[in-house]
Length: 112
Image: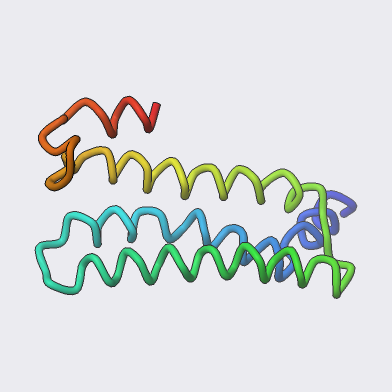
């Protein structure tokens, strides 16, 4: 019975917001490769919403005193997964303008 109680306490509103950032990553990838004039806007919107939920989960965890060990562990993991996914996606597109245009190796090296 104690295990069930601990699991329920781990899923606070801030933790659910953090989990939502992990869940949205496949949608960011799908929107990136979607051939639509709206795909860039959708990827940007999803990334901005993820950033807002990052701020909101921290705020709510402090305000509602709803922090958990699981949430404290998952928050930086979710942040790193989202940023890493976007960096990898960005490195799939070569630079098209400027003095470094055509260097297909530059963005992947910077991503690494």
